[in-house]
Amino acid sequence: SSHFGSSARASHPRHPLILPKPAAMMRAALRATQPLVARAAARQSAPAFRHTAPSVFLAPGARSFAAAVGTVGPKPKHEDGTLGGRYATALFMASSGKLDKVYQDVVGLRSMMEESKDFKLLIETPGVDPTTKVKTLEAVCKHAGMEGSVVNFLKVLVENKRLRMLVRVIDLFEIFYRTERGIVACKVTSAAPLSSAEQGQVKKAMEQRAAKGSTIIMEYATN
Image 1 (cartoon, one colour):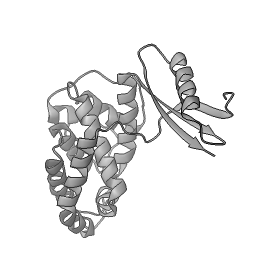
Image 2: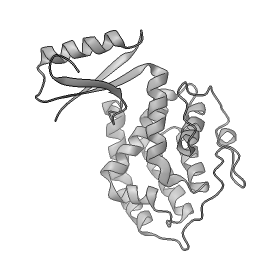
Image 3: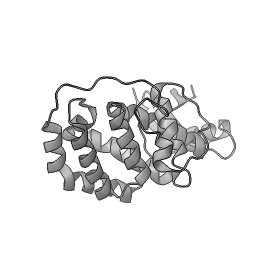
């Protein structure tokens, strides 16, 4: 707590570091492919998918994602041993040399899910035909100019019947990305809005507490 009557803590709020141009491209891609997405979301296959073995990299009958993209970089500094974390780790390792672009692409996908009920339904409904899912996702990604590694990753999630985990995987990938780039997200909650001067003092205090070279992203809220 500070003398302003507010509390500050490092966290991972949904504050994507996505540039305006990529964000606009994502929205344009969603508009351009909306009829296709809507038709795909309305198509149900029967029966619904069965769960497969939980192994990510060597699941029986599934391709290795690393083999699919052909490039494997270092593991993220932040580790997460959950199923979603293992998928996020696979994507991170496949993003070597293009980490910033892949990050923008995946948070763009998350934004599309938030903006379009049809796109969210396409991602999260297990009964949609996998071939239809892949074709629709390829069209959306092409319009948005996404990296091939992101497209291949989505295909692997479809193959492994894990596409509905996409938001969780992206959230974890965002944590990996911020850790790699030394970005610390801090949310400050106060009883009343802070003035610009007060916000500046809080940010300065958080910068002093953060590791050297860190980038502080501040978010202010009232309760």
